[in-house]
Image: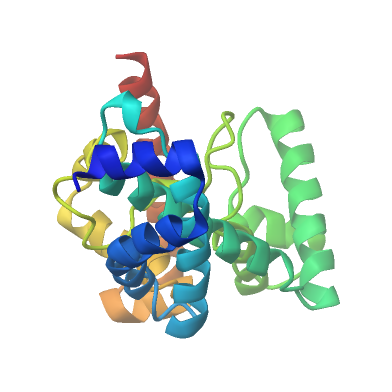
Length: 238
């Protein structure tokens, strides 16, 4: 039975046995996508369970009359569910009180400095104002940047959304605006993105891997994110 006919039959009958047959037929996609997210602190079995549940819900939501393949529809659906899981999980991770208070102090100082001087302060300037080592200021700023769940632009897109799952299927629409945005980066910038957002390393560890200073990584990271935001906005406008 062809895919379209199979889904048309299920949409009409809502037969659970037929749904289970469809799920089993496409379970390999859930497995493949789950494997792409292994190594981020969650076991494969847990990721596969999340992907499988997304697959089941996707079967119920899929409309074969729209003319797209189910694999094209379900792949970003499953990936999105897994990303949502990581976002929810990240919200449960609490920073130590000292770091949390320092982050608030750094942000408040930076906002006041910008208002008074018309430009953003350097880490050294913030450190001098609040009376802490510059390294502590950089660490506090890093805690803010490393969260992939924080909005990357005014449209609410997060940094997780800027970084596609590795080894995405070539036949699916995974190389659109995000792919073009990442393509604008040079080799060194792509290496940083891989370390920071692919492997989720800290700025300190990334600096060691790349043989540069942590401050250099911090400045380079801000530059990359601005470049990505600009490219994404241009893609949407076009």
